[in-house]
Amino acid sequence: MGTALSPHEYAVMNALAGEDLETAFDDLLQATGLDQSLVSAALTALAGNGWAAVTEETLTEVVPTEAGKQAAVTGTPERQLLLVLDLDQEIFMPDVHKVAAEKGFDGSAAVQWIFRKKWAKKVKDENGGADKLVLTPEGQNALVKSHSPDEVAIARASRGEILHLEELVEDGIDVPALVKVLRSRKDLVKLRNRVRRRASLTEMGREIVVGGITVAEEVTALTPELLASGRWRKVTFKKFDVTLDTERLVPGRAHPLARIVQETREAFYSMGFGEVRSDFIESGFWDFDALFQPQDHPAREMQDTFYLERPGRLPLPEDEGLVDRVRRTHEDGGDTGSTGWGYRWSIDKARQAILRTHCTATSIRALAEDPNPPRKVFTIGKVFRRETVSYKHLPEFMQIDGIIIDEGATLATLKGTLTEYYKKLGFDRIKFKPSFFPYTEPSAEIYVWMESRGQWVEMGGSGIFRPEVTEPLGCKVPVLAWGLGLERLAMFRFGASHLKELYDGDLGWLREVPLCR
Image (cartoon, rainbow, N blue to C red):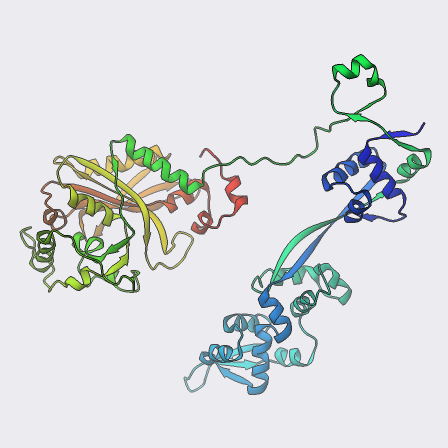
């Protein structure tokens, strides 16, 4: 009678029976005309019965970028620099990028890789002049011998001669070492891991084919119609292996940063705060001057602040009296009882257009609009500083800022408010350290204990606005203020190792972030 198989198992068995050796998975798809998932399911079932064997091989697919295709024709950047050294024997280091620009190759990549391959070395000038790039014996050999493995791979992949790096084993190339090198050359090639599967019939499987195989009607459930007709005796019930891996379902979820923003809003709303907003293109007046920050302060220099070319200037507040009070406070203290900064205040500097360096500019606008107590407001927004990129610094980041205007406000009120905020976000250990900020006195930095790092981490600054800030704006009572980092909080909360992870859009990481932490 033969062995009854499901339609797709029958098709796969027939396709494999006609081959003496292993059959590639793609060839099985073509031979059977079935969908990939059906062929995979059939092979799993046949292998489970011992009738088929499946082997898998991981290969490294290599795809040249446009720059890689160009390098296959003109040579990699280090090869082009090597050819220049072959003619000149040495180049002053400051001239390398000039030469690269003239020849049309990447000078930075050329220097990096010519050192890595030891084709050249840097030699100090005995007379105290600029360092020189000098050809090495390895570089001389590279000029006369065959190209390095990465150059070979880039060239052959660009010409369509290879699809996988493993094909270069025949050339005597150490493929694992080559993969390691090419993963550092993302500008020239992209590497992708591919699994190649092959299948064949076992001896038992061939015996089943010889004994005869037929197509059985396969059903997934016992129905009233099958029972009433008696047809249940002739059909094959599909077996389900509950131990097999299934497709992972990933539900939609809010981005970790968006979650921290929402939790922050809810925390401050629950404490009776209102939310205020303003544009992140700001004038120097609101970002610096209204905060009693002197116009010659280092933070206002180009290396710390992003200045805009268009518009280069922004209008000052329509309230000329407010502008004049701020001016006089800077010059001689005005009516605040301060001595001021003792310089001539420049209206042109106050009108300079910048990307705001802190959200305190938003808070100070809110204070000027309504300085009457009692009032509590907060803001969340992007700020911009010319920061050196590190695991906890970016030139663009978000900040939580807020103020409390109240006749009875004290430093204890400030500490209690911020402690309660962090507790609402799940951080129980908070401490404050005395600090200095130009526009608050007293001032304090806020630190949160990060259990994952086993250390205290600074989260921002806080304090009580100086009279030189509040009185020109018409406020005569204490004003508590703070500016807190948001990304750093999200980073430690969700286990990110670098702030950039919050913006890279890595779906793998985003899907693994716990919903509750």
